Image (tube, rainbow, N blue to C red; front, top):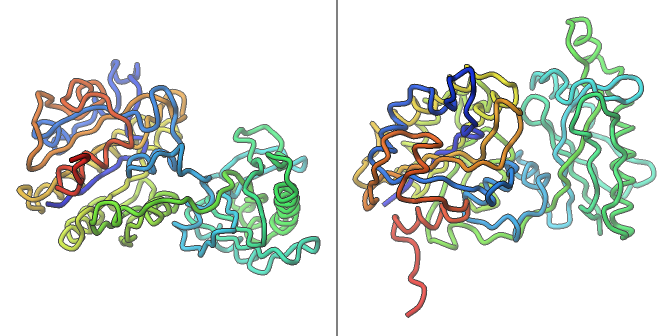
Length: 413
């Protein structure tokens, strides 16, 4: 028995007036997702806990069976790991944005107009030999990933991850000074290093030829790096060791790839998988169908519904849900459903109204051999809430799936 688990990032939502009180999931035409609900068991999941808005990092840790309160050690290291950056146990890594600030370091745009990846890569070329005169012993590694996103890694003895963010999270606010979150000298040194790097990289960026070109084209310059989510490698028992399975993951997002890699899953590269609206979902589906021949568990992640919510684009979110449905249709037509468990859920609710992650539960549907089919006939937030799984936690999902695969050992005599 094998399993394909699909996560639509931020796919769950709240009812919208413009959709006559429906959520995008409820409004979208989605025959394949509805088939899974109708032929499976459904429920709703609190990724972290009821009413707690999850980050994408903690939500994915939970969906893979890890208690975030026990294993989470910051987002930065997971982002670095998923970006292909080698990270050692003492390294401290940050999640970063290319952003736009004015002459007073007030944030104009946290994503530099969602800068193209090519422009960001050209800007990052200038950071390869970055060092700080005050801290020559610290190695600095910077890598851009997708669009405005990047990772910053600091390698040195005794550095602490206990530092605040420089990202104010809101436009119109000044870039924040990083400060230590405890009274240790290690945290103080790390904060000093990040503040020094922020200023140094700003000096490199503000007159960079790429930014001069962008301004001529009427685009925002990417003239500063905002850092947040300092972290180190988490201490996790790998999924293959826990359950005796071979697992693979398909995602374009460095963070999700990092979580999956930390969990012991092999990362698969799919041409056309972008993490944006133009992502090739059929290519992902084909890759999943091929991978399930060799792996016991294939995890598939689609980012763009979350992007649509953060952008406030209702119809774009519905369009992405339809694309996920198209992806699932290909999977259902091309796998052996007598030997494959199919799981569909979301990592968190991202509200189109607030444009933020919310603490509302997300729907889940599981179809396959041995599943106790319930009375639910549609995949959606309210429909799935009436299902046989009831209301579960994120950390409960993986044991449920592995039990269906016969991979969970009996507890007790």
